[in-house]
Amino acid sequence: MRDLDEFTVTDEALAQMAGTENPRLKQIADAAVRHLHAFAREVDLTPEEWLQGISFLTAVGQACTPIRQEFILLSDVLGLSAVVNALHDKKAKELGTQSSLLGPFFREGAPELPLGSQIVDKPTAEEIVIYGRITDNAGTPLPGALIQVWQTSERGGYDLQERGPDEMDMRGNFRAAADGTYYFRTVRPLGYSIPMDGPTGDLVRKQKRHGMRPSHMHCLIGAEGHRELVTALYFGDDPYIGSDTVFGVSQSLVVEIKDDPASPIPGLRAVHYDFRLARQAPGESGRVGADPTKMAAQ
Image (cartoon, rainbow, N blue to C red; front, side, top):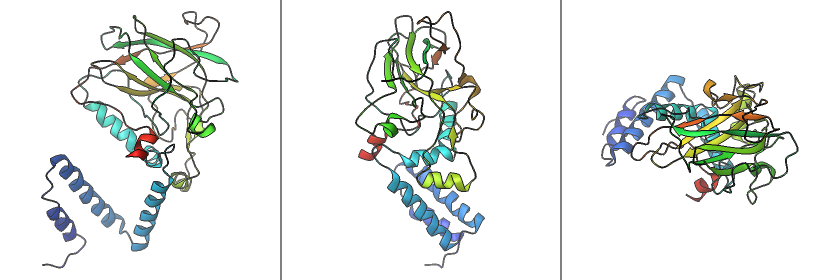
């Protein structure tokens, strides 16, 4: 037995974990211990600060419900979700449309609707069309590809926030036509503040950040044999387009609403965007996030 100091305790912890049978678990846990210990040494963490950190993470966990995933929100505002997304994209055999964040408001089980349907139950703003094609990287149409879309209302709230867990609105699932085309009607979603009434919001305020997300439409797209695409379309005239608080915006995903004679629904202003799906490697998902109800049930 030997007395341990702030350096040798790291070696001892790693030695005790050396028997971990799962090699990936061992790699991740070892790295986490090394970096956490190095972090504590770098900032000279005090017992009081350590307890404050424990209390913060406890509060984050207590804020999670079947309709709210505070840990995903925390990961988003710290940029960790964006890093994981970027790392995942680098592993792809090929890149299609650029990915973005799934976010904490994705829900499984949205209704599958006919092409051209309106996804907003009672729209009170200008109706617009979002349309395009879903293809592989060579431009070959992917008939039957599933595109799941969800957004905030024209008031800036998701259905979980405005209507609770028992109703779905501003969401829809669509199947691409034989030529890969998709189209649906909606209203422009309003940019919004992330939930600021919990521990993550408190942290954002202390960091003097605005906490805003620019107007966007979430998209989750899949087709047989292709990499699931988690992405979003961002409206370029939003004042927060250059300072998204969760670091989700990429230039290739910025769109605009305009008069479009090629729109599949004449008379409505439109957004045209074509999605390209990459080939799938064995075991790939591509999803950074989850339905809050599924996380709560685990």
